[in-house]
Image (tube, rainbow, N blue to C red):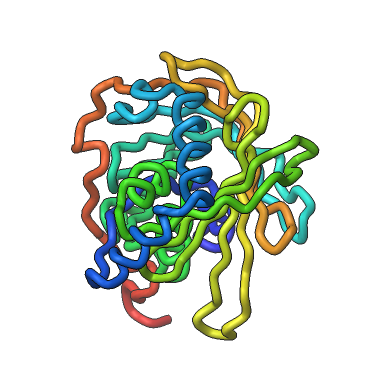
Length: 273
């Protein structure tokens, strides 16, 4: 079951903690951000936030979603889709439930991850947790709420681009660890169209590129919300989500995100046969 569920885990990703860096990094970023190029980038990002809902977007305290998720292999769909329920409480709490019975769930709090099934609660596999944290720390919400307010983050306007057959303005944010995220912003509607970042695999040192594409925006409680999200890795589609319901600020309890390990799936139980 854990192997089959690996593709489902591509669904998850949202918020995380801020990072720290030396004062010299802050000075460098502050110097860069005084230029006309950075001011243009900042103006475009501010315009994007306003298009997303302004204070209504920034004041989101929790998110509840329902929908269907589809996994892909080698760029081709390999499932008929799985219903899911996703709950987020920033900055670091997330729970996603799968199947019609909602009997499979993944809970992430801080840098910890848990897999819940009929067998009990197990620690999330290290590679799956690592992938989740990487996506969460580069997500659009994280970049807007954590990277952008950080004075150590440098901003760059990359110029006009085309993304998903739409005229866009490209803006890159680089944090104090020289980690960067690029956002393609619709030149007409000023909404984010695509987010991309690159990372090197710690094992083979190869560079990887991950993108998330946003479509079918709808106004939900004053927040412009994409109801179709598609994720790619190195140009191949790996996951697509269709949201059927979204709610903000419904007062989710912290207990929803609590989990305790009750079993080890790799520990043999009972006498050897």
